[in-house]
Each structure stands twice: as C-alpha cells, then as structure tokens.
Length: 83
Length: 150
Image (cartoon, rainbow over all chains, first blue to last red; front, side, top):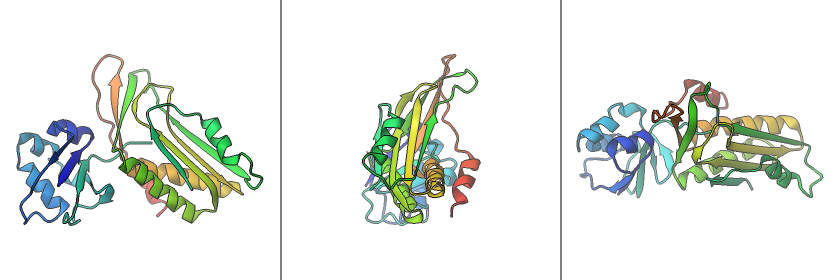
C-alpha cells in the first residue's frame, strides 16, 4: 500500500510518500503507526505523539481504530490548519 | 451543485458572488466570506499552505453537501488557495446564496468552521527576520466552533 505524509510529519520522515508492506498482524491505522515508528529515528520522531496524528484512508478521514485492509492510500498528517 | 476549487491563483470574491446571482430572481441573500493572511504584528513575511491534492476538494465538497442538506441554499462556492501567500492576500472564499439571510449566514459560518477542522490544509509561517517557519498549530477554539454544529 501507498502511504503519504503531510506538513511536519512529511518533514520529519523526509519524504512525501512511499510504498510499504506491513506484516499481516498490522490490521489498524494505529497498529500501522506503531509499525512505522519502528522503522527508524525519523519515523519515531514523526509519530512520537501518536494520538495527535490524523489519518485518512483513500482520502477520507478515519480514526486510529479503522482497519487498513483493502486500503490503497493511507495518509498521515497533523491536525489541519486551513481556512 | 456546489462549486469547489483548490488553486494557487488568487480569486475575485465579487465575481464569484455575482456568478451565483446572475440571471436569477429568486435569490434573496448572498453571504460572502473571505479569509486573508495576517502579518501577525509585522513579523510574518508569508504563509505557505500545503494541501492534500484530491482529498482537499473531496472533503470540502462533502462539507458543502452537508450544508446543502441542512439549509435551503440556492448556491455554494468555496475556493481555497495553496502555495505561498503574503499578508493582505486572500486565502479562502465561501459564498452562499439563499432566499433568506439566516440560511445564507449560518451555512457560510458552518462551512468555514468545518473547513478549518476537516479540509486537509496546513500552514507554515515564514518570518520577515528570515527565520524559517513554524507550522501553525491547530486551535482548540476551531474544534469547539465546529462542534457546536453537531
């Protein structure tokens, strides 16, 4: 699946998107955040305050409990500041 | 029915409002809201707005559809800019039209409240003293403003 990052999540990780293949036991958005956090310091830094990180699956807002099965694109970003 | 645009270029608020009333005789109220970039007491050189292409349009469209279901609106236009925006320049436009003013006022406010907490945009500050920017932090007050509609 493709993951995309925005704002300071993108800056901390150092890239805007990537393809990842998490193991089968990673079933939810929250578990994906935990799994990504283990990939290196930059990821751990980006996700250190995990509960503040917002997520979207295929361009729709989701909660951390949401299942990731079948997702094509999962986005992670800070709370939004548009308008 | 709603017109949603995400664009780098500026917009013309008067022209967008006129487009919603042109050739119609049933519109009784037009509410136009424009959000501008502030200079934050003279320290800000520009805001840089990042967005999630695709989702930004879709999310604002979802909010507009919700507004159309809640109020008897005749027209909705929402335009949000991205890229570097200097103090004094436009950031966001919401125009609502209805037969009566209450629906137009309330729907415009609803659209702005929801857009601020749900549309995937992020602001980074660039300061005049050259210090590169901090990302603007989301405000609890914006969340509370959105919650009052639920």
